Length: 481
Image (cartoon, rainbow, N blue to C red):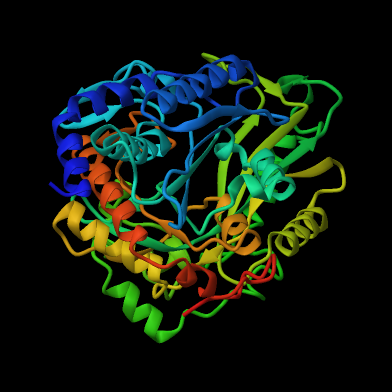
């Protein structure tokens, strides 16, 4: 039996153990957005270190940062072979609204072939496919066909700030020939794909303050300025009736979608307007005219209101004029857009149209650059072969509307060709109640990851050094064909 066949056989005979391991992983409430969850985040990271050690990874440890610790491990027993960096994140989104969950988000259960729990798909289940693949190689053969580094962070859901600082200050910790990330989706169940484009992002808050305290709406209605109404008007002013963003300058750097790209996207499986509408649960959606839903979703900027807080939020009624109102918003950016320029444009727009009788503040949070990857890179083709073997289905190249902040650091600053090999589904309820992960994708994804290690080991390291050069930092238009 060949080494990769032995690893596949191990994975197949230990599927139940992989599911139980994922259950334990998902049970940690590692919510990075909540400061009161720091102990849970550390407990999750420590457990992951212990597991990596138990399967045979070496130098498994926690690396302290100014925030959540980084989980690091390596195996360097393949001299003269390339090194793979596996990135993933063990932090998860908040669970609100909790009353919409059918089961406890941190007591994972299996129903109808899915594991349900917060982080099951984003990103613990997808990360676990690679951990299971490493276990399969090491437990079945005692070795791997190439060298491996693992870097798993606990702050991806809040912008990866400390990981980015760590990589910039200690790039040797991520020294490798190429990287793989599994934090994306597939077009549909059993239909594999590689992601070659991600949108960037910019998060911000708008706060409007009026009276010095909440006021009685009967006594002061029609007299006192209402921050909630002013905030609604400011938000409304960010959008145009034709579906475009009303902020001046936002579209100045947006790259026009070329006809060949539109044809490519139109041929991508699972991306028709009908299929996307079915996933949203609505029959029609507003938005920018002249583009398909898939084009809007992956290749055009988007502005979203993520949450609004103002006045009384409890049960029943309370007649009050709130002293302040706040909205959380985020913008998705596409090729050639720079978060810094967009940030300046947004702030100028809000302040220009802010009512003078209010105190208005715009505060910006995490941002990330968009990215596009050359589909012809040798490591991308190796990943395609691995997916074909793992799923018994020819994979597709797809675009994603999502954002993974670390990708630009890996590619543009560290010069690592990066494979975006997703195993989630758009219907997995990521960031929503009842998040889930298809267990057949856990097993198929693990086999694909096993094959990927074997396929990548066959490539010469000179292939990686020549791929696309090293684009300048911040060069979002360095699109490699």
